[in-house]
Amino acid sequence: MATAAIVEKSGKVVIRRVGLMLSGDIDHPILDADTIVVNDGVITAVGREKDCDTSEPRRIIDCQGTAIAPGLIDSHTHPVFGDWTPRQNQLGWIESCMHGGVTTMISAGEVHLPGRPKDIVGVKALAITAQRAFDGMRAAGVGGGVKVLAGAPVIEKGMVEQDFADLAAAGVRLLGEIGLGSVKAGDEAAQMVAWARRHGIQSTIHTGGPSIPGSGLIDEHVVLEADADVIGHVNGGHTSLSYKSVCTLCEKSSRALEIVHNGNERIAILTARHAIELKCPHRVILGTDAPAGSGVQPLGMLRMIALLSSMADIPAEIVFGFATGNIARMRSLPQGLIEVGRPADFVFIDKAQHSAGTDLLDSIRLGDIPGVGMVMIDGIVRCQRSRNTPPAAEVPVIAH
Image (cartoon, rainbow, N blue to C red; front, side, top):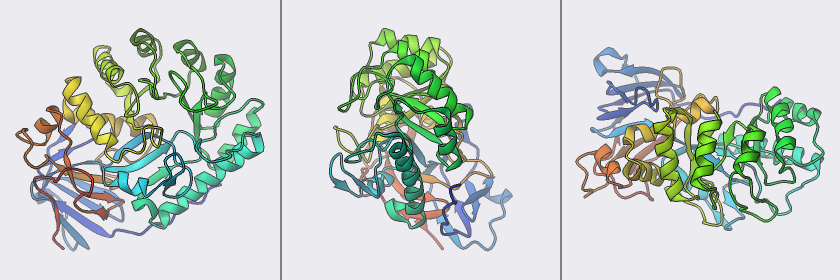
């Protein structure tokens, strides 16, 4: 079994004078609260300061009226090893995304590894190694402390149920994008998805045209037959299915609808609107699908939030939930919601300086990217004013 990473403990942290608290829960997106208390990386109180035990903290964060939201969860990434991507030969991309408010990344397969093994023993060995390496990397504080949930094998022909049992026993909890390996037929994928699900492994399927050599078209018929837990980049990565086909997936499947930055923006907007019309917004989750041919987008998640709020006319506080609480629930993660007992992963944000918006939510509705003033992971401040976002109008300060 995998050994849990040992990370630094935050002690007691008091976060006060919060101007706007976004919960991550799209059913109750704004909390009537101005204070959060954290103990050793876990939220112990959320409410009004007068009602919270704020005595004897190790650290006090004065938000100075800025907003706080759960740290963003990128539902679709392609890490390899360390804070480096061979896809663009770029160092420090994970830590750079943390400056864009991302505190958790979920691997959709370590597919860009040069010489990636495709024999079954190699597939399993790579997944287990990636899971262990990224868990250890976070414990060492590499990549800004971002929680990279990696070790997502790309399934290949010839795998049997025992292979999935072996992966699960070793701590692997994800499958890489179905369709990036030799398994592309719906019936074959469905059998492996069922085996994975039986052993507690969550699956994602590629959707749309090919993205890398060896991948191919995965249309709505294959997606429906495979019945993976997450319909990966439903707006294409990069090339989307037709809107009619996407509507079929929205209407005939009950699985997560993942909208990504590195996809078709028109289909992203239409998919989000269609999910609202179908009264299934809880199925919408967001990712970047980076690193990819389009590069690395440190602000990709914030850009998606601004795009969907401004162009799909969805309230910004709801879209934040697509990038946090919806993913937490779809992927059974403890982080992603501001609730007692949850990990203290937060992004502190405000409207960008000189935005035409009257406040944070209005600025996002107008299409502006907000400014990040601080990022906290497990109660520990990982960065203060972001080097990547536009400057925030106000930023929190470490008062003690």
